[in-house]
Amino acid sequence: SDERGDPAAETEHRASLDLLRQAVGQLTDRDRTILQLRYGESRSFHEVGRMLGLSESRVCQIHTKVVLRLRGHLMKKAGEITLDA
Image (cartoon, rainbow, N blue to C red; front, side, top):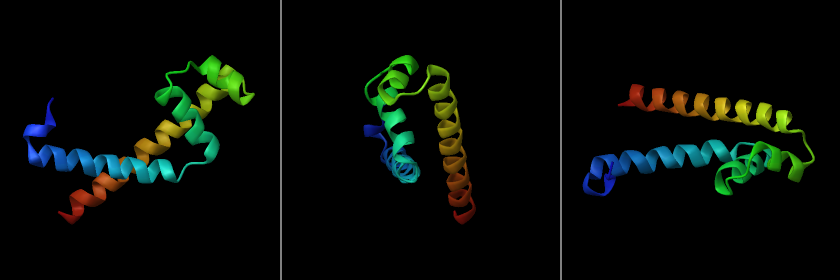
């Protein structure tokens, strides 16, 4: 959807991005690197592993934990915002 025409949706989108930036900022350098390579550079788990000296399966495990951690952080913050409203 196009949020540019809806100021409320755009504000919510920006707030979500700020929360995500905060959560990513709390990750280790290795975890941030894995996310950057995976999503920023569209690398496969195999490629990421090769670049970091890890097995493909280990990168996949770390990725899963990081995504779950980020999701939990965002859900917690969303709950806090909802309770404050």
